[in-house]
Length: 73
Image 1 (spheres, rainbow, N blue to C red):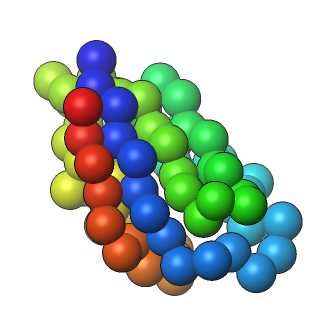
Image 2 (tube, rainbow, N blue to C red):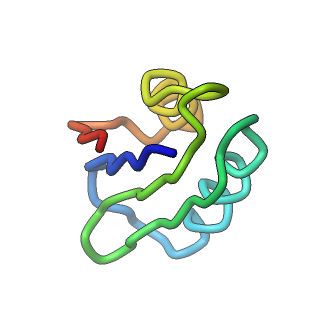
């Protein structure tokens, strides 16, 4: 199990939270996804045998939320 934190551009509306979390939770291997609205971060816990941080970053970018940087532990 790995954790990734994606630093995003500042979110402009709280409705983004549900859209991002719902989409990430549909990705195979993702166990938890949490948007930290005020800090502009997305925290994801995933099974590295099934998913990877690059694919999750691509998912965020495709949703229209550009990732500025990420950290995987």
